Each structure stands twice: as structure tokens, then as C-alpha cells.
Image (cartoon, rainbow, N blue to C red):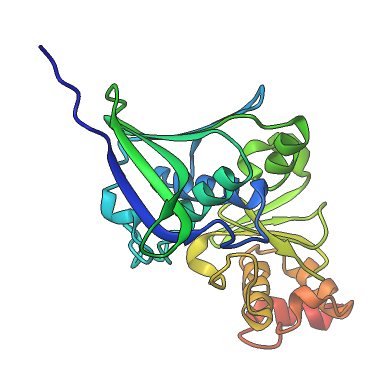
Length: 268
């Protein structure tokens, strides 16, 4: 006779009100970030019919990653997240807002809920781990999404958008410049914030460090990085024209300027 093991509970010192300014878009961003990092930039994502499924084949989340500050990617600059908080915060926000959510973690099913903790006298996030069928990876499943939720999630992630809708793009070793979209900043295909730049940018994570909330970035770092990305396009005449127009994207173009850009500026 097969006896199922008793479920295991992990209680995290995180109350309902933590990151109270986050909604479903921010929560989905954190789950997508994990999938992008696990998959090396090509996550397996399905969105539609009120359901978001994010699958990372071959991945596994050790229980220790439920600890704040614990992460499997802290020292990897190629990863978008490094603070060890993302997916825990996502589970908290989705549970608080009433979206049924489960994590299929190899042969375990993790279900988040809030339970009162007698030691703290507060409701805290609780992850209940039960046995399930072996998946061979990690899959986040979020249900109960409205059409508006789906549209908001899709808009925040370039991986979920039709490539043809992105318009003209310059591909570089640092990432992409989206020429037909003004003022949006993405890192690893995920929306970070709106900017005052003329164009939109999608940086590879190793080329732009985000602040802790992953919704802000140093204005100096951003301006320096956009300058470098333009230099790497090889579009020197266009760079010279943009410098002449004094666009903020090339604010620091006089630093480390390639000779071919200088020659193009003389022609302009």
C-alpha cells in the first residue's frame, strides 16, 4: 500500500501588505524573469483563456530558495534577478489578489496561502508542499486572469508579443534598439520603466544594472549604456545625426567615441 507523505509547510516572514504597490503585472514579470533566466532567454510561456503557464524544463527550486536573499543566480551577471526575492514576492501578490496559483516543482506541488503565525501574530505567506506527478522541471500556473490582466502582462513582456509588431529594430551585442517605440526600457525582454529617451531599448541583463525593485535604473547608467549601444550598431551617420539633434539617448556620445562616428559628425 502506497502512503502519501504528509504535506510540508514553509512559513515565510512576509505579511499580506508587503510590496503593496505591486499588482498582477509585476508578479507576472517576476515569474517570467525566472523562466527567462532558467531558459537562457527563451522561456516556454502560454497566456490565454484566463491562464498563465510558465514552464522551465530541467529546472528545480530547492526549498532554501524560499528564504529571502537566497537565490540560485546571485553571482551570475547574465541573470535579470539577483536579490533572491522575485518569485516569492510574486506568489505573495497573486495570493493576496485572489489569483489561484500553484508551482509544480519537479515531483512536488507548491501552493501558496496566508496563515496566521502565532509567534508574530500576523498572517504570513505559507507554501504547502505536497507530492505530485513528476514534471521534470518547474512550472508556474496562474489562473483567474481577466482579458485586461492578460493584455497588461502581454504588454510588459516582449517575448509574448508578435515580433512583427515591434517595428524596425537594430540588433547589437548589448541588446536591441526599438526604433518605432519611444521611451520604453526593457531588460531581457521585460518592461522596466518609461523613460524620456527618443527610442526604446531592450538590454541584455549583463549590460544594465537595475535597482532592487527592478522598476528603476540609474539615469547615468542608462544614458551611458544607450550611447554604447548606438555605437555598436555601426550606423555611424545616423549616430552623428542624432548627436546633432541633441537627443538624450546620446547624451554622453563625446566619451569613447569611435573614429568613424567622429568622421560622420564632421560630415554632418
